[in-house]
Length: 192
Image (cartoon, rainbow, N blue to C red; front, side, top):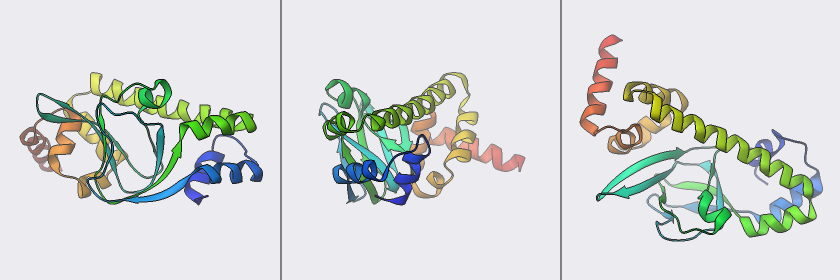
C-alpha cells in the first residue's frame, strides 16, 4: 500500500497489518493522462479514487459552459457520492487536469472488506465524515463568501492550482468570469 494512503487511513483509527493487506488486494495504482475523464455525466461508477499526484476537477455543463465545482489534489478522495452509494447516474464529470497517479478502489469490493473486517467500515465512515465536512465548508464558502474571499481561500488551501491550471477553470470554481478573476488578482497585487 502506498505510504500516503496508509498514513491517511491510520490518521483516523489504528488498522492491523492483516487489514492493510486486505485493503491492498482491492486497490490498484493507475496513471491517467491529462484530459482523461474518470466519469462522465449520465454514467455510473462504483470506483473511488485517492489522489497521489496530480489534480482532478469536478465540473458540470450548464448552458454549454463548464462550471467547476471542485478540485481534488494530493491526499484527497475523489468519488461521485450519488453514483457510488445509490447507483444514480452522475450529474457531473470528473477530469484529470494534469497527468495523475491515482489509487483506484471499488465500492463493491469495499463492501466485501467491511464484512470480513468490521473495523474497516469504521475507518471508511470516519474518512467519509472528513470528506463531508470539507464539502460542507466549501458549500458555505460559496454561499457566504464574496469571490475575492473564495479566491483567497483557494490560494491558501491549494496554491499549486494557480501555477498548474488555466485561469478559466479557477474563475469558474470561484464563480466569476476570467476577466473578473483578472481584476481580483490585479487589485490584490496592488494592495501588495
